Length: 212
Image (cartoon, rainbow, N blue to C red; front, side, top):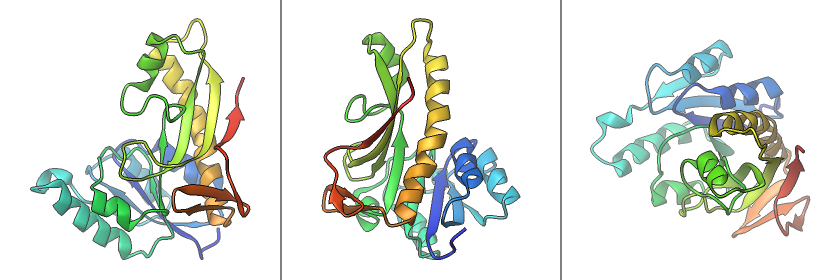
């Protein structure tokens, strides 16, 4: 791993996305993993990989802003080049997002800009969509609205349920998220204003990986 590029991972649960990042062998160092919930499996995964962990229990804070201020302080102790949301189940305040703009990414289970928000698999099936997928995007102050870097796309099968669709999407997320992080660590991807550049050229849209 290249220790020069540092990332901090934020999570709230089982940490399967974190595990995929650990297992990939990124050209970067995971400097810390921070959870807003104590005792979750994601913290155990980090400890097994000898990654420093921290817990900031959001239920002990009087406001979202107070939590985000302490979270920002904790993150900044590591001076990260990138903050990675990996199943972090918190809506972040505008001040927090703006502080890390261009250095804060998320993965969302839909082909953005379609199906922002929750329950994407059920909504896709209810609407009879032929395709579904997941998107790696920079985070801005609009919910699931930041510029998209990379998408995985796959067909909705006749025998799919929301659960089976979610499982198939998750396996592809575990491929594309480490890929996008690697591109950022290698300097291939850059956010300028609201535009994404790859290898020095402005992207007209996200890179799409089809799994048909």
